[in-house]
Image (cartoon, rainbow, N blue to C red):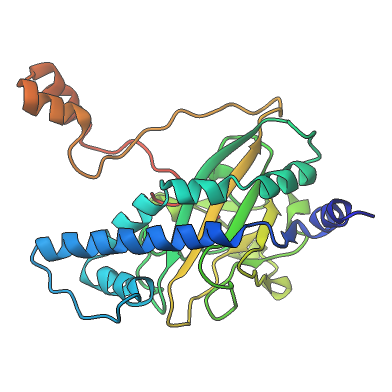
Length: 301
Ligand SMILES: O=C(O)CCC(=O)C(=O)O
């Protein structure tokens, strides 16, 4: 049995598999450097807006600066999360060729079968901050992602630590091994909550005693079946948990349909800008209609 066959057997029985040494060290280093630069940018913005920035140890932008930013205003941490999630350094990690190869093998696909990446983003979870469930602080209850993405699609879920090993203390992912065999499961919808928390598993249907915290080392990738029940662990460390989240859909599946996305501009929309520059009534009309955002991608970016 070769490595991919062994991983596929585990994926089939438990619903997940961990792959080792997928990422070159320099890709993590490049990501870390850019993350620090984005944090410095957010700190400068906060300062320009009159916020008082606490002193922090030089070089400790991630460990101290990011936490300080979130305390000043969660929107600064959200800025960091949104920018780093669209950085070339993150895209390089999220389309790592070895991870793509592993995905094709788990989905039983051929070498060049088309895959479709969706919901790729960086997830930040702040230490001991469970009460603040916002887009810059992920803490999800038991769920499956089936209704968060393309209906009836076949895909894998990818979860990768980006800065440190994902230990129980830093709040690694919890899963229920084998729960993918139950399919969609018993789910509930809550429309009075942020989008990331909308769909969850009925607590009575979750076999909590079978839950397992899956520790994932830096360099490894956790790849799991789209039907696997999973939830966030609690970050009880003093560091920010920073992970890659992404879905890889099998684009050869007959039910697969690519999406069109709507952007939320978190400020002025292009039409409002057009109206400002050209004093256009038509652009102003559209800008007013856009007052409410249409949809959000998973990950809250
Ligand atoms: O990283 C986490 O804490 C949760 C991620 C997750 O469950 C998801 O994206 O579906």
